[in-house]
Amino acid sequence: MKKYTNTGSKDTRSGFGDGLTELGQTNENVVALCADLTGSLKMNEFKDNHPERFFQIGIAEANMIGIAAGMTIGGKIPFTGTFANFSTGRVYDQIRQSVAYSDKNVKICASHAGITLGEDGATHQILEDIGLMKMLPGMTVINTCDYNQTKAATLAIAAHHGPVYLRFGRPKVANFTPADQKFEIGKAVQLTEGTDVTIVATGHLVWEALQAAETLEAEGISAEVINIHTIKPLDEAAILNSVAKTGCIVTAEEHNFLGGLGESVARTLALNTPAPQEFVATQDTFGESGTPAQLMEKYGLNAASIVKATQKVIKRK
Amino acid sequence: MSDNKSLENLVTQVRRDILRMVHKVNSGHPGGSLGCAEFLVTLYNDTMKLKDGFDMDGKGEDVFFLSNGHISPVIYSVLARRGYFPVDELNTFRLLDSRLQGHPTTHEGLPGIRIASGSLGQGMSVAIGAALTKKLNGDNHLVYSLHGDGELQEGQNWEAIMYAAGNNVDNYIATIDYNKKQIDGATDDVLPLGSLSDKFEAFGWDVLEITDGNNIQAIKDGMAEAKARTGKGKPVCVLLHTEMGNGVDFMMNTHAWHGKAPNDEQLESALAQNPATLGDY
Image (tube, rainbow over all chains, first blue to last red; front, side, top):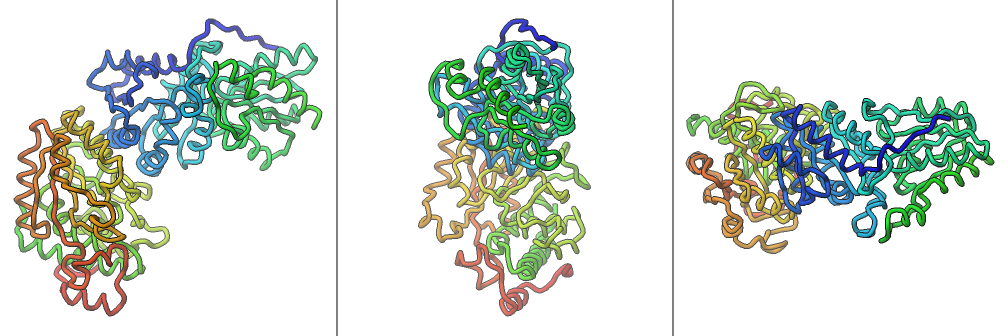
């Protein structure tokens, strides 16, 4: 089985910040908007390099989404930055009417997604955002797994015309995807080849899936790990091809099992080739305060949970 | 500049369009549409600098955003009569497969519309964004928007009002349709707005009032003054005092026609008060 190495843990939000910095130099139409979280979103360098293209909106997320929609008229490509909670639930109707229904080329960039935001607790964590965003017609939904991939995705969405939700996080996590790997929206990345189970993971759970695959290999179980960085549009062919070989699947995400990647995968299987599936996800609950590692453990979002889910799903074949 | 007589003729025809559109489908919002007919006719045929044709980016021309999207009949009629799309298409208002949706949208590709509106309170933010882009593009044309007064009960407006003043968005004129009425009744009864001029001024806007917002000359003069006040560091607010249902006697002085269509008899009476000037669609 192919092994992956952590080349040095970094936060995915820094991948976004560094991608935005690069876009500032390469694409003069890129503008950035932030709702009083410039440091948290790592947007400071873009702000310093291009003060005329950086818009501090203040603590007014609804206004930020509306302004971003308006800025597209005349050719700008707005990137909005705030926490995932305030990027989605707080401004759902603004995104729905002014961005998605109006076909505006806005990039909604959301940090501190999921439970790994940590100590701030459930008011700031969101485990529903993938569902909220994937329900919107025309919205592309991306959840990247590490620093390199987040940076590559940030560059890629600028070149894609249409509304995008880009989801990333706060903690430092393993950085293992190649720095030069091109990001293709809607194209899954197969990380390992396997025959007994397909594990599709998104975001921070991709590294956990790779750790799980190593554990499973030691138990004699061959796992095919696929990184689904784009939840919508979903790479259905990659999933179906893999499941045709393995006969069962585990989905893993830092999100509620309702509305997340797992549900999209289940629909794909139901419509094509039904197969046993287990969901590694939060179980219709809010989060709470704690360290990211404690929370991932308590809410069953780590490699151990994926191993357990795999053992279960294989028995159901 | 267009002469007042031809604008008045256009207003009369727009009123007929509005009434016939909502009557045909027995739905829609005639009251506010009629109240803003003079304003939008003057805006599109006298005040704004417009290119021929339509493109989404609106570079090198003034752009307008309708935030109170429920008065779609009036904007559809004004746009069609200005040549953005065939006047006959007004016949499809609110019908299945029409580009003239109940509330305006870009989704069906209707020329003249740059944002969906209907869910209230979002248009000012959008207009500010377009104004910021005009500045970045070195385009010295203006951005205009129209909002209902009741719509100002939506909190997002006040985020936008604070932002525009705090960031000197001075290439922008926001007009408030100040008819003091909303669906459930008088704004004073539903949720009092207080002094809008004091509120906008306190937030840092330059405010002017058009006290007869159904008079073409008053609108011309007021909007000329508003334009003269742009470029001086402050966003400009026009409080446009209008009469809901203007031009149809039984629709005036009441909020009853906010979202109700006339029946056959009422339509006949309303059209008799507004004889065709440019030909019905």
